[in-house]
Length: 180
Image 1 (cartoon, rainbow, N blue to C red):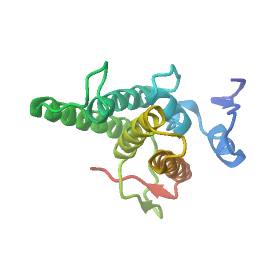
Image 2 (tube, rainbow, N blue to C red):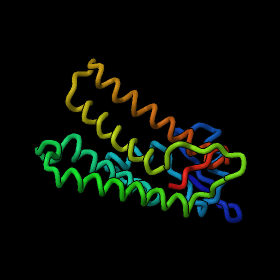
Image 3 (cartoon, rainbow, N blue to C red):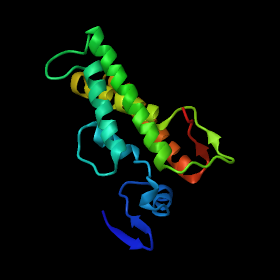
Image 4 (cartoon, rainbow, N blue to C red):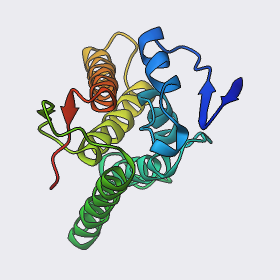
């Protein structure tokens, strides 16, 4: 990534990002704790090394938990032991809460005139992580022309677009996040 520094603001060139979003990100100082794009979140969910803060680590951990719950790991099928299922859910709730806590502390919220969003960022990232696991599992296990495969990827794409719209609206002050 190319970057140049002007006063306290770092301008970063973002590949494969629409100009309006890139302009918005360039106008924000890095210290403001910007939310990662869906592209970075999805790469983190797949275990790729990405730089961009703790939300990417949380997204990866959520994806691992969803993989255990939905698909299974290491040749072992999905979790069926009640204690494991409860522990998995407890850990996912903790990660969602950690994401929401980080967002409250790091992302400026515009309260006046901003419409309230119905979900927290943590719950949206949790759904993105699950959709990512399901889409990749479908890719590995279903025929290329299977409707379930296309449906899983379509769902993931819609969630990704909705997340990016939410980020754009929160950073522009048009949308605020619930505080629960």
